[in-house]
Image (cartoon, chains in turn cyan, purple):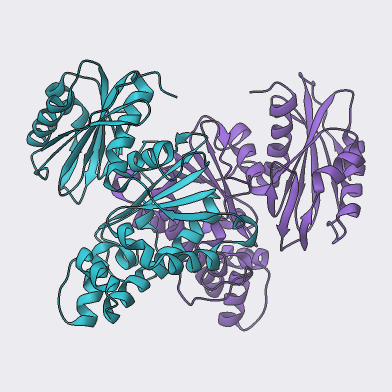
Length: 310
Length: 310
C-alpha cells in the first residue's frame, strides 16, 4: 500500500519504519515532520532476511530525490551501537543484525532503535510532547514499554535498549509474565492480561480492541477489566514519576486508543503513588500521532543523525 | 569536630556538605577528590535557620585561601533550580529556601542537591563507579533513594529532585510506608521495615546496625530479615535495570555497610527480574567511599559549577 500526500518538500527528508509484531509501517517525512508519503506491508516473519527485504521494498516505494537515511524502530530490545535486535519475544527474534540486513536492501544508511524510543521521539518532536521536557512516553499495548526524552534526547542506558516499563514487579507471586517472571506490570496491565481477565469474568474470549469497544458501549465486564489494568498502570506510573520526574506523560499504543475511558483511573493511581513534592504539575495525556508516532520518530532519528535537524 | 588532613592542595577547592537526619558532615576537597579537611556537627533541627547557621560554622572551620563554592546534599526532595527543600519527611521540613539561608551564612556561592544525587556523583567521580557509565547509585538506609549518572551527568527530572526508588509499589495492599501509601519498596526493604520485621520475629527491638552485627555473628532471625529485605531490593533493582540499563549498580548508605552479607540475595533478585537482553554485564557492588560519598559528591557539584573541573 502506498499513499501519496501532496506537500511542499522542505529541506532534507528521511524515511521512518516501524516494525511491529503485526505489520510494518513506513513514512517519508521532511524536517518539519510533514508526512510526504506512507507505505505499509504485512507482518514480519521469523525470517529476518525476509523482513529486511520487505522493508527494502517499502523504502524503494517511498524514495524521492533526496533521502538522507532510514530510521527503523523495532518491537524488541535493541543494541543501539551494533544495530542488532538482541531479543524480540513478540516477533520471535534473538540476536538479529537487522540494521546491516536492511542497509543491504535499501542502499541507504540505517539507524535502528527500539520502537518505544521511536514513538517517544515522534510524540515529543511533532506530537503531544512538543515543548515539554522531560517527557515519559509509555507504549500501552500487548507489551508495555516506553521512552524518556530528557534534555531533548532519548535516554539510552549502556546498550541503548528501551525503557522496559512492563517488566517492573508490581505483585510478588503475581500472574506469570511473557518474560518468565511473575507479577510484572505487563502481566497485570498488558493486552494479553486484559484479554485473559475478560475471559475469566465474561466467560468468552475477546480481543483488546473488542473489549475497548464494549467498554465504550458501557458493558460492565469490559469496563471493569480496563479499569483494573488502568489502576495497576497508574500506580506503576506514579512510581516512575518518583524516578523520572517528567513534566508530561504520554500514553501511546493499541490500548492507549481506549485510554480516554480510563484516563481518570490512571491519573488517580498516579496521584496515589507519586510523592507530593514531585507530583505538582505532571500532565498525563494520550498521544496525538496514533500509530504514526513510531515511524515519524524513526524518521526523526535519521534526520537528526544525517539531516542536520536539531 | 575538625580533622586536618595534610595534603598538597591542587587547583580550585570546594566544600561539600551532607545534611542527614542525624548529623551534618562537611569536607574540603581539591579537584582531584583529595580530602583536605573534614568537619562535622550535630543533627539539624526543625529550624532551617539554625541548621544553616550550623552549616555556616562548619564551612568557616574548613575555609582555606581559595574555595570556589559550597555544595550541599540534603535528605529530601530538592528543587534544584530554586535551591529549596520541597519536603523532607525525615528532617521534618517543607518548602525551606535552604540554599539562600546557607549562602547568607557562609558568604560563598552554594549549590543545593538531593543527598542521593550527591552520593551518586561522589561514587562515580571518585569511588567505585569511576570509568563506568551509566551508573545507578542506590542509597539503602532508613530511606531508599538513588541517583543516576548518565553521560557523565546526574539525571534530573523537571524539578531536579532525586530518584525516589523507595516509592515504587512492589506489593499491592502491602505494609504502610512513611509516605502514606501501602506496599512501597521502602516499606519492605528500608531500615524501619527491617527493624519492625526483626521485632516481629525475634520478639525484641534492635536497630539496623545491631541487626547487621547479629547477622554477621550468624544469628538466624537477623540473617532472615536482612535476606528478606534484600530479596525485595533485588527484585526492584532488576526492574530498574529494565528501565535504566546501567553498566553498574552501587549500593551506598547505612544498610549497604552490611550488604556484603546479602549481596548474593540482591544479585539473585536482580537477575530474576532483569530481562535477559539488558542483564548481560551489570556489576552490582558496594560503594567505596562510605559516608564520605555524600559530602565528596556535593563538593564535586560546586567544583563542576565554579571550579572549571570536568
